[in-house]
Image (cartoon, rainbow over all chains, first blue to last red; front, side, top):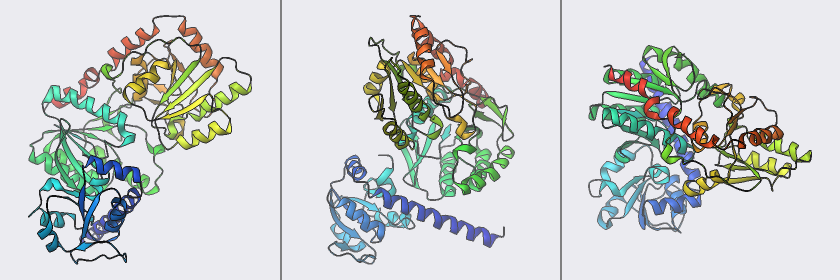
Length: 138
Length: 360
């Protein structure tokens, strides 16, 4: 395999794995019992969801009756899904209003970049990845 | 030392395997000091020590997952690695190449052969291709079969060990019913449909002795068993109790007369093995029925009933006769426990592995 093909192969693999992970997490968010249990395990009372894509909105729907979702945070300050009634804020807004809540990061591809940005004003132990929230070690 | 697990050690289906791995880690700790271990869940790779998470990182691809392990091996200056095998792919082979540069390594094959357990065509193809390369990079492996080599790698044969403190001797019971018990993750190789079908035949032929079958645990075959119970109208005699632990599980063991080991290994092309469950049944003093060659036993022991490794219904009359003969002897439970304690202590089982690591 040439270098270019290897590189392309790696990208295909990464995209495939991201799609598989998203599909799995989408499914898990439909399991009400799991969500209630995980909220309890992570000791979540109020939370911000980072990412206004499908995963973020699905997570909002899974959490909204069980915990206080303060807002969905998105770099563009909006949702990429056409849904009404969800409070959305920008990263800058979060910086201003954040008071120690947990933040769940939903975008898989940009997790590390988002986490690094959040860690400038949020303790690491308050930041969770969605997969970690759903099935990681507590 | 590091014990590398590349799958989710904390998931429901891994409860028994987790216990086994932690017991192995205890033995390695006694010999080599700190033993770090890894697990992968929720797309996160974790490094743990003594049950506490030391490090974690998002790892979407196998390559990222493996790279995190290599990074931690370097960071914590780890020189010995015991790797629990999952499946082979190009990244796993590359991982072993890099790991070997930093550590003395042993690869454990939990099941051999395992082709029958794979249903995904891509995984099957990928694994079959890349596992042939393992022998170029691994000098020692362990397995629970009697194979001298696995994929060309010299192998140390192990038994699955059992912790006596976690598995107390079963208490005697008084009632006349014969209670069969199966504690498992209800996978296809357990083959418990053979017991349900055997009971259907037994009761259809007017079986007088009441025989009850209790299934403990949950898994992919549970629904199939549920349908069979309904189809044969065996609700009074066969109960699915779900996952039980601690006192509730001990209670079920105390009420049981005979345990049922794997009866469906033929489905995954296996004829022999050393399942964790046979050691656990033995250490609790519960005679058991199984359908394969168990590497932990001769097969002639009076407290074992070895049946065929195929899809025929279990002959319940044979089981009753076996139990009636056995219960005339009052000391069989103590004898089973004594044998199990001698045979299934992880310290003695892992001795050859410890010796291998010590010769550095």
